[in-house]
Length: 216
Image (cartoon, rainbow, N blue to C red):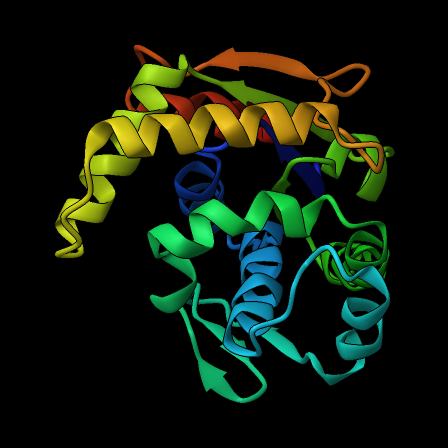
């Protein structure tokens, strides 16, 4: 039975949903690295920091404390921000922040230590390539940009946030470009990873597929 599972893929591919449900089914720790980048992004937005000022960003990282609970709640410096990190503004800013070398280095150690602390499902953009290249199972989860944008749009509507679908799609495409072209740990399919296209699969089908693979 596999103990360390790495799930990578572009924004909106269903990584968070699949990883959290798979972790719950297996009794594993769920490490949501995207939430950690979002928490840093929210911190910088609240402080009105220009993310292009990398020196200032680096200095302020020492003030950032992030806690993830097994229930999927996210705390930033002691305050719960589970909903606040999922707003369109954070959606728009998270990729530029995540592209910063110092931010990635700051979170890399935290993410790897969490993932290796116990059997875990870790999801993000560079898990199988940078954080856990030695994971027991590596998965690259994809879906078409249009389907990913629709999923995200419906997610926002369920939370009472009225956003134009075209804006969501544009954000998805922009994040794809930034994530794939950044100099520090660009989004790539990890060597030896299983490619899963979830465009026409339900989350239950994806979870069941991965559950069976973990058991092997």
